[in-house]
Structures are given as C-alpha cells and as structure tokens.
Length: 197
Length: 259
Image (cartoon, rainbow over all chains, first blue to last red):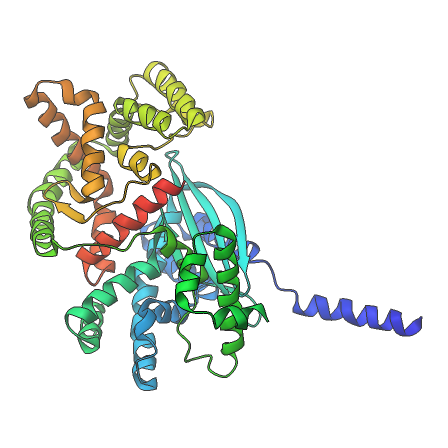
C-alpha cells in the first residue's frame, strides 16, 4: 500500500514537472503581454516608439522559433544544402523574418479592440492555434499560429493570415527563384533585402 | 506498428486512399509517427514536417500559370500604375479627407454591394448568413445613415462575405489557370467569371457608364488610401512579389471557400 502511495506521489510530481502550458495558453500569455506593452502609458508617443518596439520584439522572440520558420520556408531544398549553407541560410533568413514580421504583428495588434481565442488543434508535436483579432473599427482579422513543441514549451513557426501561410508563401517564392536561377541566386536576393548589408 | 506497415505500401494505393477522410487522418497520423521515429538520429537532416501545411495542400490546387509572361507584364504595369498614379493620388486624397471620413466611405461602398453577398450566400446554402446580411443592410442603411456607419456590427451582426467565385468554388468548379489582369490584379479563370457575376449584381453597374467609372475610381482611390501601408509592407516582405501575390491569391480563395 505504501509503495503504491509513493508511486502515485512520484507520478504526480513527474506530471507536474513535465506539464507544459497548452499552445493556446502560450499564445494567450504572449499576446496579453504584447497588448499590455502597446497600451502601457509609460511607452506612448513617437519618442518612445523604438523603446516600445524593442520590448515587443523581445517578448515575441520568446514565442517565435524564427530559425525553424526559416528552415520550413526552404522546404524540399533544405536537405540538398551542406551544413555550412544551412547555417548561413538560417542566420540570414531568420533575421529577415524577424525584422519584417515582428513589426508587422506589432502594427496588427496596434489598433485592437479585443482578441477572441478560438481554440487549438494538436497533432503530436505540432499545434494550430486560431484567434480572431477584432479591431476598433469592428473589423475581424482571423489569424492562425502554427506551433512546434520544443523541450519545454510551444513555439510559433508559421503565421497564417486570412488563409495565407507565411511559410507556404515563402516556400513558393523560393521554389520559383531557385527554378529560375539557382540557390546562390536566392541567397543573393535575400542578402539584397537586408537593411544593413 | 500501423505506421510502418502503411508506409511500405505502394504510393498508388495511398493516392486512392486519400479520397476518404478517415484515410487522410490515418495517413497524417502515420506520417507524424514516421517523423517521430526518424527524429532522433537525424533531427537536423529531416525536411521540416508541417502537418497543417499538408492539410492546406490537399485543399489548395496546384497553381497553373502557363501565361506567366503575360501575367508578369501586367503585374509590372500594375506596380507602375500603383507607384505613379494610384499611390500619389490616394495620398493626396488622404490629406484632404480625414481617416474617419474615408472609413465611412469604405463602409458605404460595402453596404451598396449587399446584393452580391445576399445572392451568393443563398446560392451557397448559407441561409443564416443571408439573413444576417439582410438585417445588416436594413439596419445600416437606416440607423447607419445610408451605410456610412456600421451599428449592426455593435449588435454582433458581422458581415458575411460571399462572392460568385466563392460560390463556384463551393460548387467544385476548378480555378483554372492564373490570370493577373491589368488594374484588377490577381485572378483566375474562375475568378474572372466570378467577378463578372459580382459586377452584374453590383448596383453601381446600372448607373450610366461615366458615373459607374467615376464611382469605381473613387472607390479604388479610397481603398488604396486606407491600405497603402499594407501594400508597401508586402513589397518589403517579399523576394518575388509576383509569385508571392499569386500564391497568396490561391491560398486566400481556397480559404474563403472553406469557411
């Protein structure tokens, strides 16, 4: 009897240690934090813009797996690259994604009235979380976050806005660019897009 | 277990299996199990497995663009038209008309197009949506001053988007090839037929031609003035804007038909 009790206690303790938040809860936490930052009275105005942006970015960085996104964007071309090429690609393209999308999400969240969390769908180590952003002008923007389980939490690797997946869109562009020129041509184009080369 | 046995079957069998929903689920499940098995030794080497993208791929048709050269020419024309005409005109207009006025005008145009949403919601068998649209039209045309305001949205009556391309998609009409029209932008064969249907249902079509063109010009300018930031962001974020727009067009239409 005592053994069973010990076993049960151990199991419960173990369950508490490995229990991570659900993907939806993780998205909610980050979203609420970002919204609080955007509404913070100490961070309003044009002169606080860069500080506000910095804080929002830092918050999003914790929830987004930009390296995974970059890898997913390369799709079927990933396996064909050498380890050095992979490392270079992930480095430059994840930076590009971070730059373009952090501010975009921040702008999206800028004139929000409220966020409706619609639900989550989990398939093994992947999850889809759907929300509707309701603007002050009473317009609904459906948004989906696709997430991957890491060792201790869930991280976003794709954003789907009105049915358009960021990863799929880049994958199609990369396919076209590689088919028309080459992988090196693609790298050149990504580098040309960097704000400070 | 089931994962490995299913995996070893010939692909033609898998293709025929794909036709039933249960089989799709099983296939996805076995793919996930397969990915999990392989993940340990070669975590960095596996192609990124994306179960939700697999689902999308089943809904989105393969993009066919045999007229790419012509389409790209029109795409570049539209880019130039946007930068040289539409954007400067709408910026100028934007400084004259305050944002709330422009937003009201956008709501007014949307309200006028009520017949498109009503008829297509009915054709799609969405009678509840058709009812909501009718209520919205009555409320917004009266209380909302000819549609300039949207009091219905405050009563939780949101717009129920529906158009003829969406109706055709629900009737399983294939999209056909991609067409990037001058001025009108991304479309497909089905999208073009759909647009013609929408034009036939749009009340402004029945104004004298000169008036109709004027209305469309104002509508487009107004729309651009409210959304030019989004267009600029698209240019910034893409490496091949033509392909990006084409991919987004098909993804968005497939999504609209699914809702």
